[in-house]
Amino acid sequence: MIKRKLKLINNKILETPEFIPSLTSIKRYDNYFDLLYYLTNQKITHFMISAYDLYYLKTEIPNEIYNQISNSNGLCFMDSGGFEIYTGVFSKNWNNDLLIKTAKEINSDIVVSLDKICVNPKNSFLEDLSNYNIMRNRLKDYQQFYEIVIHGKHISTIRSFLDNLEIDKKLLAICIPERNLGNSFDIRCENLKTILHLIKEEYGFEELLFHLMGCSHPLLLKKYAELGVELFDGIHWQDSLFIPTKTDFTDLSRLMDINCSCRYCYKLRDIRKINKKDFENLYMYYTLSHNLFHFKELMKNIRSGQA
Image 1 (cartoon, helix red, strand yellow):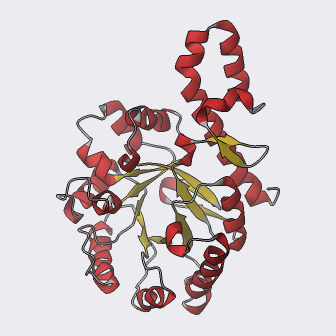
Image 2: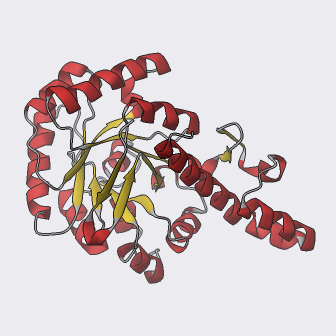
Image 3: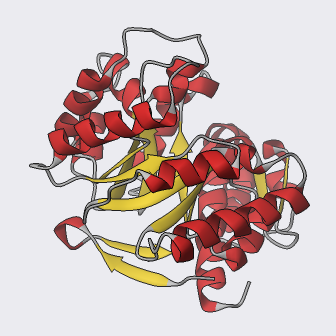
């Protein structure tokens, strides 16, 4: 495990390993805006939201929330929105200009996934790299750090990408989607070790953080952190219930069944005794608070070697 404490923009602190709760319209529930409102009002230390969402949903997002994202005391990670385009469900008008515009407007601290926005399966990774260089040059006069995602599934492709990668002081991390590591856990770990060795040792990018994207299962966070992963993100904090005693998930509806003693569960049990209507209305708020509290505790324990 690599343990670090980095001072970034405006004296904001990033300790690793760390989990970044993320929000995306790819799995846009009816309560999408409630979740966004929740994240910003809870003043979560770090969170990630898609630039695509911020741009196309801006007219629906209350100014209060938009301003809170812009002025967050925590680290705001902004995803490029490329995945929304990749799914083929969303607007094809999304492009690099809109990404840069949104990054500057929202004043995000870290722009994630400086890859090619207009998805074309014929694009080579070197074209993605060229695009990355253009975009980072356009952001150089602003405060944002950035991360670059390597989408290749084969070690030879990743090696070719690293051969041509130029880095600067604002490149914070190299990312790999967890799904690209393989189908089975054993193979994922084997490929992860190889990729980390390539990046950190063969290519000497030991100062760059390694971000495993789309990984938020509590058991996997611990195991991958032991191998050297420093940043994680995922959406399971919002769709599954964290069971701290088992470091596992169950259905969101079962918060009162898992015998948790955290302050959120304690408060919710009191509310249930007093008023069932309030209990129902406040249930999701306290459930999500329970989840994020235990994710935070898990990462703290991993950093201290107690997990």
